[in-house]
Image (cartoon, rainbow, N blue to C red; front, top):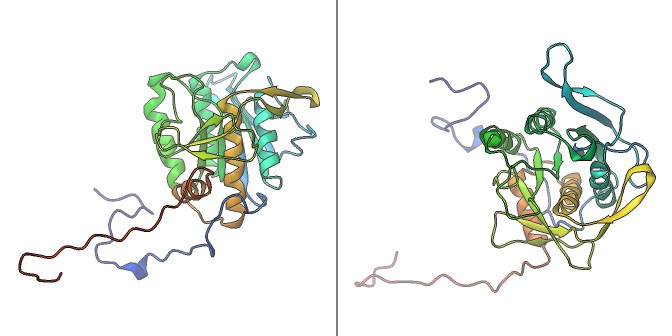
Length: 285
């Protein structure tokens, strides 16, 4: 079978000089990185309230809905803002963390947090196709019939260098796509430091971030205090934007490494020497 154009399955007949990789200079250090400038962050959620003082301007907003004629699910531009406040809260946390990033919105939730798996898939697929740098997904679905398609979509994003930062469910149930290793999965901690993230040595949740009793922007230019993994996720999405603004060529697995190395609970242990062994006849290898 012929490999699809542009895909490399093997280096047979070629060498290192045939696949040069241009890397960023310096080592990503996480918290002391840039401000998010030049990084495109898409919030797939309930929309974002335009001109909220804690969110600022949007570079674009779209909504997922049914075409009245074809009945197909489509993504179209909108200026309707937020339907329930959830997306505005996430956008505000991203803006606080990465103040100079570009913010975009794809609305997949309606009033009272209503939505379907089909709308979630359509919105996420569109965001991946637009090749946003970071996609904040403080949503998940428990419907296993969407599992295979979501998994393939998460892999597409991973290979296209679109980092999906996905919220773990607030209760111990099976839901997706946060459980996929191709996304950056986030739960919440209750530490007092609002700028602290932790690595989880026992995944599938990979990172913990502030999400307990946090103040967030809400509808009508207001703020509220709320709790949930949904609000820890945009903090990590903002950290990714800050890192990418200084190191734009990083892949998702490199972003994970930067987040891991800068997590407050990760300690570098003493370097250990590998044991040496000798064969019975003292021959050195």
